[in-house]
Image (cartoon, rainbow, N blue to C red):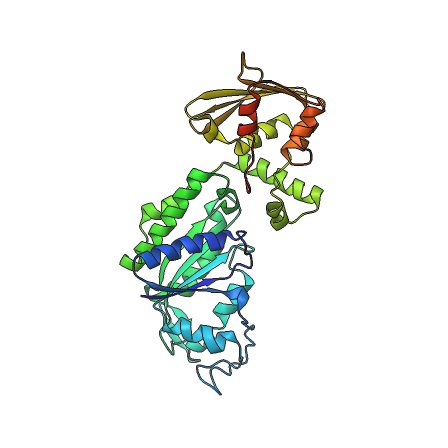
Length: 355
């Protein structure tokens, strides 16, 4: 099976969730024996359709534009058994790069009028490849894909040409939830295999790809902190990642929500560790974290006999947490206090690149 995988995401360098999902899908397709070529549309020149209909009259089947679409992509598309349309969700549908590609496939049609299933259509000049649509979105609800689904079903759904729709909501949050991310990626790999071997994707495979990974409260609180931090620091999401930044908590509640993502749970082995925070300054409340079996549970209040207690002004610890202050230097200046296993604390809080 010859497959042309079209990626219309403009992001690169680990920024594109569309690309991450597409790579998993393609790996599965290749593992099942397919010949797959990935085309990044942002690297190609695909001019907008002019609506001149030269491809219908003067040069039937050939576009007036002398660009990458005419010279390379359209012939490859026609020669493929399957085309994968991988697009980020922009304003609830395909993005401009993908729309331009789709519009430029007009030469595959003849100008005449026919009726199929009570719909007026143009007859095909040549048989196009079957279609798979892959898209990702930041919002957590599957309903966010309703409009793109309607569009691609209308466009590709005739004659059973649309083999699968693969949608991943909450894609931006996926990277921070390791176990769910790995399962989603493994399921996407499996979907690629299934498309090659059976020309469809099993319902249980799609369910794994689309599984819920967070709730609205967690998603919105962390997401809002993220954007507030980007605005306050004057950085783009790409710069945020390159600088290894994290959102800045603005309350005890958001600190308890966000802090567990930065704990290196693997360093404690099979132990159970209690990490206590006692805050002063902007926040005067306390909380503690129970770290056990790879999980972190946050509780308000004070724990009797914790393994580690950190007493600190809230704003100072937020500076340390977000990289605005050097934790060791601030400790030497006695601006916060640690009781208990200091070495373990440093291991637990040692951040890795990208976390």
